[in-house]
Image 1: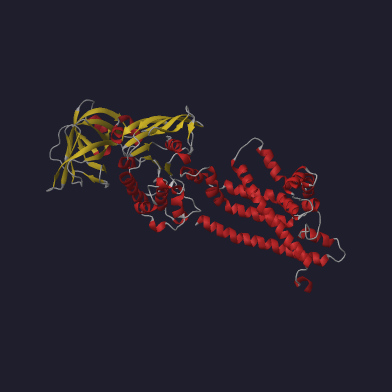
Image 2: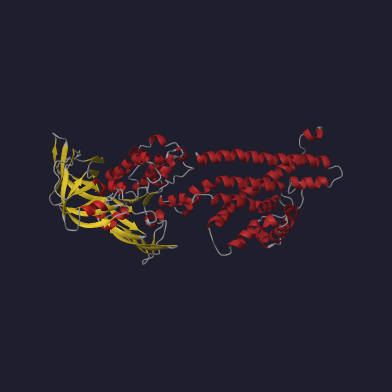
Length: 373
Length: 234
């Protein structure tokens, strides 16, 4: 378990967080800029001391104001990958990589240079200086450097924020490999919902220096009061589904979710019975009063309206339950009025697109496609 | 022009080698303290810091003769520091080249500290934080991150102090006098020559030599600085 219970005042910014989350897999620290994400990871790493409270990993206290414990960063064994890499400019890539490695007892060096070089594909960079690396290369070396110090927890503070889309795409698979191959608990700081959904198991959502929500990603992301924190483009529902069968003739797969819900999507490369995580964005869902007939959309899910949330601009977010699973639709306020939608009504949700964000377990591929049109 | 191109005389050689030795020893021995003081001023806050800073910079503003006289009072055979050094280590500074090195070190110290301090202040502290998370303690961070990144400033400070040492006159002549082969450095030798009836041309020769030495030190430091920058910037 990762236990956090801290208070910190920084000028006019007050930070107070309390959470207990599994110290395994990927924990996303999510929130807008200024929500306190970096403040919290700095406290985990020991670079910032809380005014009061306690931080413990697997029962081992790193900070405990009551017991007078405040381990210095060098004794916490927490790897930290910073937004800007922070490679040592006067050292070669190889010496950078080995900086922390050389400072731990030889018998604790479970992760070694050759495997990191291979995992991150940085063999050709070893002799270079950081100044001669691209942004993506720098981040890979920074990740390698943190891993080689054989940490018990890895902090990634928006490691992709300074990179363009192409470089992001270059690094993400490496982070997925860390999660899947090394099995090191990771705290991943991000303000990008797509990254969080792709990588994280659990999420700690921060807002203005407070914990707004915590728990498994699929639960937290679908909760109504959090939609505005996620951002209009990405708002929607996350559901866990099971691959029921494949229709080889048409190249389709059928997924089941919730109590008796089912979805048809283009054939996916997962075995029957495997569990996958789906994301259905609100803007990809339309609504119909009656069951649509003669329509190309394959997925028309019966749903019940749980709540109507006026959104920014001309929109209205409709929160529904379909087969017991959360579902969101973003329609115009005008449509909501013309359809005379109200809470408790049965309706049909037309799902135009489904993203398979993470194929759990063995595979690392992430696919996104239009469904049914 | 023959007088200008002649081999240096024994007396000139004496002054040149003595000056170089005094300057080198003063820089090398004061450098560790210079780095420490620069680090204290750049990174630490403590009560009395302004006063401490003032004392460090004193030699820049006080007449050198006064500094020399102060050294005489402190490090003379009967001075508190001088007596202690003699009783415990048998070291005499007054009227010796070691005393000349001390005088040069004191006079060059503020220049050295200022250059190193600016360089330490320019070190990205986030790199030091990164080193801590990788398992390096404060001292380890200092020697593996702070000092290497401060090298350009350490070099500049050393060269400034070295050049200042070569030119040191006032504090030296008051503290250690004018003894050929022991404390008669180039500036003191030039002064001595100008006091003699036919010393004008020899004084000019030594002045030109002093100029060339200073120039050589600057050129060497430039070349070294380029190499250090190449190492740091990659």
